[in-house]
Amino acid sequence: MVRAALIPIALAMLATATASRAQQQELPVNSVADGVFVHNGKTAQMTRENDGAIANVGFIVGEDAVAVIDTGGSLREGRQLLAAIRARTDKPIRYVINTHGHPDHVFGNGAFVQDGTTFVGHANLPRTLATRGQFYLDAFRRTMGDDLIDEIRIVPPMLLVSGTLKLDLGRRPLVLRAWPAAHSDCDLTVLDEKTGTLFAGDLVFLTHTPVLDGSIRGWLGALDELGALPAQRVVPGHGAVSGWPAALAEERRYLQTLASDVRGLVKSGKPIATAGTAAGSERSRWELFDDFNTRNATAAFSEIEWE
Amino acid sequence: MPGSLFRLFGVAGLLLLGAPQALAAEQNDPWPGLVQDIFNSRPMNDGNDVIAIEMPARAEDAAIVPVTLRTKLPSGDSRQVLSITLVIDQNPAPMAAKFQLGPDAKVSEISTRVRVNNYTDVHVVAELSDGKLYMAKTYVKASGGCSAPAAKNADEAKGRLGQMRYRQFAKSGEGPTSGTREAQIMVGHPNNSGLQMDQVTQLYVPAFFVNELRLWQDDSPVLTMEGGISISEDPNIRFTYVSNGAKNFRAEAKDTEGHVFQREWKIDDSGM
Image 1: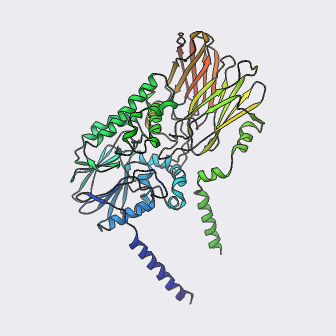
Image 2 (image 1 turned 90 degrees about the horizontal axis):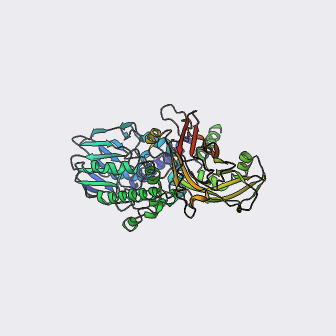
Image 3 (image 1 turned 90 degrees about the vertical axis):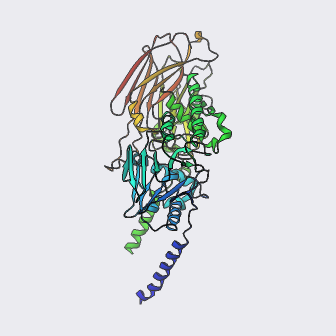
């Protein structure tokens, strides 16, 4: 009797679940090259309203399998990215690659946890997530709210990269490269050799003010080598997919100006509280400048004063 | 029934675990408890004429928030500042630093950098020679974006362990004869919070930080800092004091693993 009564309920629940999966909203993605899809994140801070979907995320489809590159700023965005993949291919997702540990790139990881999917990151990424993961969850609850934050899980990589690593999706080699501290201390780039598409993570910013969370000297030092990578186009961490290596010019100018202005402040004995005046000439060239420039300058100051 | 009870507690437990520090913070003010724990419940007097605290309204970089403490006693006042304590109420370790001021160094200003984990009151408490405590405070908003009160370049921070730098600054408007000097000591140290768990062992990494920094001009103490994990990586103190004509400046730092770092520098007599 009880059992008989439960069956229709269970069926109804199943139907609801199926319907909700079918209706799972897809993250809008563009095909930027053969088998390469990118969602262009909104240039903004992560909020309740934008689901944290502010970074560029994407995927590459090989003959046998798919690689996801960054998963977005919420589990909701991750699920929508998964729906966008499933609308285009049934091939298994073999790899989820995180370009670094910032929340707008890793908060969606939980949507991709399943047998047969390997999470890949810089050798320093587990440390970053261990140190910062809980702090990020607490901090972003304020702007993103309980609904988005409660379901997020911090998923660290199991396959770690130091130096370079080649992955294959079936006649589709990807070259992963771990960088010394630059934008952060766990930056990883992914080069799709077949199409010459470089997923640069936050080593490359366009439009969105670059964010310094690693080493300004390291970042400036990495630009030449980064620019020499054999790519036709870059998917930056933030900003439009652009030609390579021309896309580096704006960021290079910003970082050089910042470093040079901060050096001037340090040399003339100014205190760190004045760091925010550095790179003022760049203000009109970037979005979110007031959100990030003083922070960048403060970080750069604390590094450059040890020169 | 036991099952649903269990579930109820399980859910409650999850809610507690996931309780946003930020929201909890706004609901209870930790300051009364901190006065009890740190100051042994001694009465707090209004310190706005005694001590000033300057911090940015927003922690731009959560790991490096500049703070300046400035004594405000008028020159005729017979009282002296003995110590200054800096408390960041909402940090995991609220007591950021206690500065003991050398009796003859007339330290009038101290700047350092701290971590700020959350939206928080920041209190400064001066103890004067009248035996009373004087308090002033400010409020700092937490950083936005992906800034965290953690190392940016953890390997480099380790590599700098124990390096010390001293620098003198020109003091604008003060001639060399005034004896007023502004100087800075930097100590290379990761100042790890110990709040992260080791992925492999699942044990918390022990905190590792500079817990004492002493500064002298010749043999006369200028300033001593007892510090904790709220002090930023590479502890940095910039301070204004009055020279006793000393030829040398000396610094000694100790950390929680028992390292002792010492250095001595010649003082530039030009009064720059």
